[in-house]
Image (tube, rainbow, N blue to C red; front, side):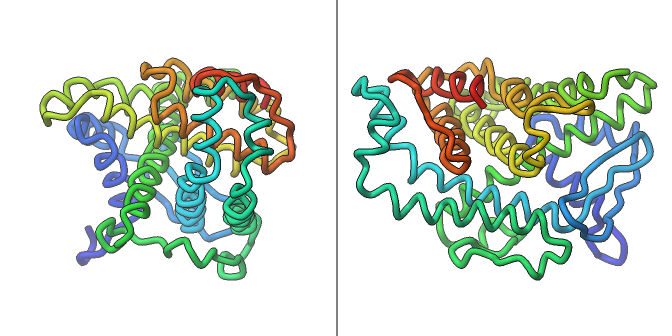
Length: 307
């Protein structure tokens, strides 16, 4: 703290510890060992979030982008959850159910408009020039300032998504410090995704037991935050790089690394949420969904493979 002001470093530490409270001491140890400078840079087109052994830097717009995508992504549930769930139960193909859903057009149009607003913000050099959807609250650090329970859930999941990204960047700091960075930057990016996921989920069982929570409930929420992080990753990556480049594997490969092997039942709410996010991506891109009837888990794998 400096004169009572919250510094960029304070913000990142609070996000990391709030997202993974069971590893608070380990998070503190990471900062004590590496102690990178945290630099808030000027807003620019796209977003800024990167790291090396000396610093982590980001811009204020990045947090707004996460917020807007997070709150928009949460609404994928009202659009696509009914058809995802009913396809698994009824044996009807997803595309057939989408055609039969008379109420989908209106809610889907609103969802697409929120997603488009997020893209406008990402592409804006001046964030003030980008439109803000009227039904998405302005960014706020206080969860309880949001009166709508749906907004509170979106807040929680968005914070988890941001934390995942910060843990990813911190892994770069650690690798750079240890002179262990990969010769192939694509391998390093994927390894940082896997490390961040493991850090956020590896000690959940003990945390759930200590706090008298059901393990599946805690894993579900944490994993939904990771699914939202995967959506953010898709949205902030330029479309021409979705298939990968010399610095990153494809978006599909990275989504699979983040979401695959989550040990929850095949039609758990987590898989339904992740499937709904993916259906939204396909619908936004006008990609036909030719999936036969299957569980939500199978649908996630199917859509990622065709992304």
